[in-house]
Figure 1 (cartoon, rainbow, N blue to C red):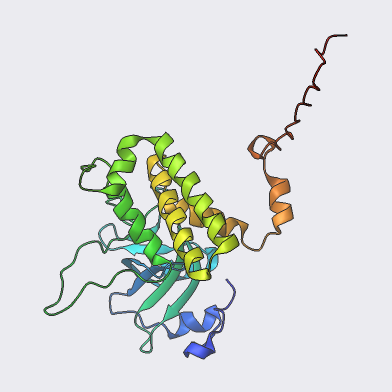
Figure 2: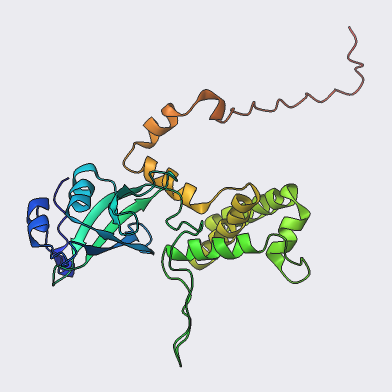
Length: 262
């Protein structure tokens, strides 16, 4: 595995894998806690344990391996569920006794079917729940959208979209897309941002309606990242390419006094 990319502007120090292995401090039981964090969103996904063998396997294969304390053996994350964790970087803290894994998560991290194992909590006294920030807001919004399926349409606009069915959802996306095009052509950037937000929201409703997950969109964008747009279009199956619309030929108007018959 290549050394961790340097990010000195934030105080991170790039080290080779061999140095990391030599400086991690394992407990008397030969273990070190490892926190898995989604590399794209920053979501904390899970905490597990590694022994030296698991850490070596993780660095050597690029897939997260842990030590199961209950089974007393090495296990690869996703070996049964298929929910693999692809390693993007491995960090260790100032004391060398805790690991932080930046991962690309396939499927979900938690055995309950949740995206993260940290889905329960309480609010501290005097604390306020802050809305999700940055790219995480799409994940949070999608969870809200998905939770509205089956809710009372009278109480929820999103629920009313689901209740009216797929044709209505598609019509709303078409409507909002038209408003975005109008804003892009004639209005200021604030209006463009607002209209694009409307398109994104209704597109998330479509994803939920079709049983897809927003993580699949992230995965598709990641797959395309670094690939030429021209090459990407060439790689698509012919059936998935848009069929160019034939130009509509206008009928010639009949001249007065002519029947059109020869």
